[in-house]
Amino acid sequence: MTINCWTRLCLVLALAGVASAQDYDLLLQGGHVIDPRNSISAVRDVAIKDGRIAAVAAKIDPATAFKVIEVGGLYVTPGLIDIHVHVFAGTGERGSYAGDNSVYPDGFTFRSGVTTVVDAGCAGWRNFQNFKDRVIDRSRTRVLAFINIVGNGMRGGRYEQNLNDMQVEPTANMALEHKGLIVGVKSAHFSGPEWDPYIRAVEAGKIANIPVMVDFGSARVRTIAELFTKYFRPGDIYTHCYAGGGRGEMTPEGRINPAILEAQKRGIIFDVGHGGGSFVFRTAVQAFKEGYYPNSISTDLHTSSMNAGMKDMANVMSKFLALGMKLDDVILRSTWNPAKQIKREDLGNLSVGSPADIAVLRVEKGEFGFLDQAGARLKGNQKLTAEMTLRDGKVVWDLNGLGRPDWNTLPKDYRSTGDSRWDAYSRERPAAPAP
Image (tube, rainbow, N blue to C red; front, side, top):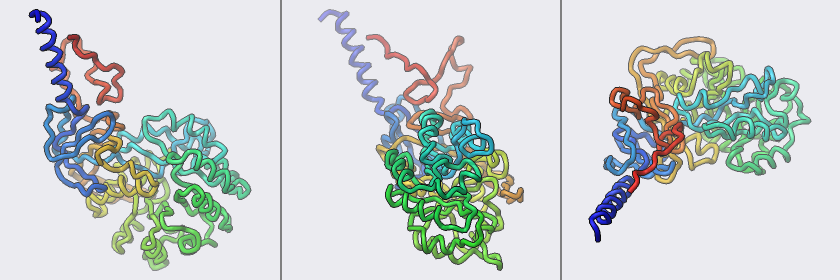
């Protein structure tokens, strides 16, 4: 063998050795992992390969990863799941949640650690395909949906009060056609005395084997006790669980309605759905006193809530820290619990093989204030901030540049510092050195 051939062979073998040593695309090193699905709350390293969780261990050799990001002192959790948002934006329809009241998801999700949202009934069977093409298929955020029992969706009063447009069969068929994408049926805002919207939503849910989420509306001739005992099944979801009492959440004496406590024992799900008009501290504080805690934490994100008391998912989660809930329990209600509720147990966990949707959170210490729908303030000494968010193993949000080099350590004519193996916004993957 000539010297030239021998040199080339050695170089090829050396490059092969480097490639084999780099078993992972990305390693998050030294963070405190909270993964309720796997009962982990401890310092762990998390390795990612091909967009999925490859390993979670006390110590993973950094030499085995192409990219290492140090996250010591931070909390590493499954990507947050917000099961109550309104994101059917872009139609131009005024006063409509299938229009101007909704927001595009990507501008609000990753910056608060959210990787999956569930649109809460903006579209019905008549306009779901439009919603899918306009928003779901074009978003980096994973967008799932509760389909509205109203065929026209959440387009305002004259549509949402139309019992003739609440049809079981086409609603169920659309859900079956998009199984796993449509994860529930929504009924909302109905003001009539009839029970038909809830009866039909549950019928559609039974056919498609998915839960129902209800925003109970405003008719006071119907009671939540009847809803829970006559119509709801275990696993069905009552949203806006800490609202101001107008739906019957509180007794005249200022205590939690006993029907709620009994329903939760029977397996009915209670979701926060903060929104712009559905969360008050006087209800939440009393609920905590009586041991009534939400099964899931969600925002009810829309144009009227995003800049008011709600703000974003991290802010809503921080309110529960201020109310006295432990961090691990807040994470449970923002990851694994909602994943189970929508029957998407591939999400909301850091199990090996699961999609590498990850939130890296900081718990800030200081003096903070949190607002409810009325602008009433609750003081707190902790606040959650999303430092980094990963969707399918790629960094989509990096608040303080944890994954980036300092500019003055780079070449004079530096360009992109990313790589498509871990950076969602890197367009090119550098070629391997020529042998």
